[in-house]
Amino acid sequence: MGIEEHIPGGILLGTVEKLVNWTRKQSLWPATFGLACCAIEMMAAGSARYDMARFGMEVFRASPRQADLMIVAGRVSQKMAPVVRQIYDQMPEPKWVLSMGVCASSGGMFNNYAIVQGVDHIVPVDMYLPGCPPRPEMLMDAILKLHDKIMNEPLGERRRRKLEAQGGPDPLVGTIPSSYRYNKAKRRQWEQAVAEGRQEQLRIANWMQEGAHRG
Image 1 (spheres, helix red, strand yellow):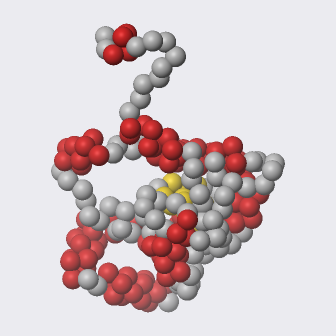
Image 2 (cartoon, helix red, strand yellow):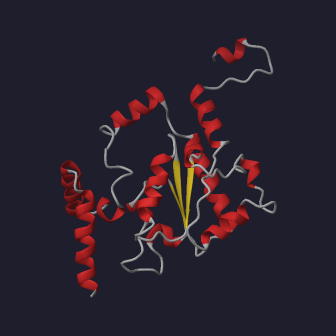
């Protein structure tokens, strides 16, 4: 029982939230950004054979200010990590990050001091894609799953109520590295470092300590 019974046929009803999320998911513009061999598979996904234009994603933007999706395709070196973060910071809100391949997600086979062991140490990640390297079909499947996540994202008052039901927004969600997120002692250590503004010093100290154990 509702307004649907009192309107003529051929009229569809919806919500502004659904409309906004639909427009966002149908027009994701990835940044022209590749780090290693996974970028070749990302390029293949944009070719005519796989035709990402079906999802409104044929425009790979050369400027991060015109992109809202970062596909981290390949391993992230310590030298490249500040550049990745700078590109992410230049992208307008709302924006999403897809970690493509095992090297971007966890360092992969490169378990050494030169490679960041997971891009979530640098930027918040919305979707992880396994594989070494993942095929273009897998990338498209991950993008479709990201579409579902965007489509079901609450906005406005519903988002506020959801955050209140969860006890309020966690300022560390999306910013705390995974190596600190699930360890209570390390999480408290990270929270204290954030409060004092010395996150980078903490990362460097732990990195040097881990290097001493390996050496």
